[in-house]
Image (cartoon, rainbow, N blue to C red; front, top):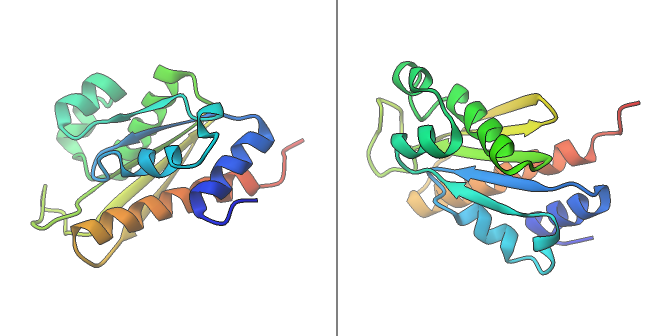
Length: 161
């Protein structure tokens, strides 16, 4: 099994015959870069979305205008909708989303370091709220690592019978 989080995630996806897509905002494709850096990831990773603007969250990931207006891009509801939208668009078995404020300034009245991670699998949603410290690069890296941990936790759950 792999030694990095992304290697472990790709190994588990291969083992279980599952595919993964991503919908990233504040991480700007960093998570996709980590996954595609693993040799053989193309077997489980058909592609992803970077939806940095509100317009693209709505257009590419299908996040409703109501969620964006009432909850904002930095919210659990947005992370949930991003993950579901990415899964629906690509047909992937699982989808991860990352949205938040990596700084350096507060955005949508949300503090720097606030990140939401969404996971969608077979009609089920999981969201995780995180508060990271550090500079912009550090927050983005920590968000990617936390997203991979959430994915690994999901993939390591005992099979439901």
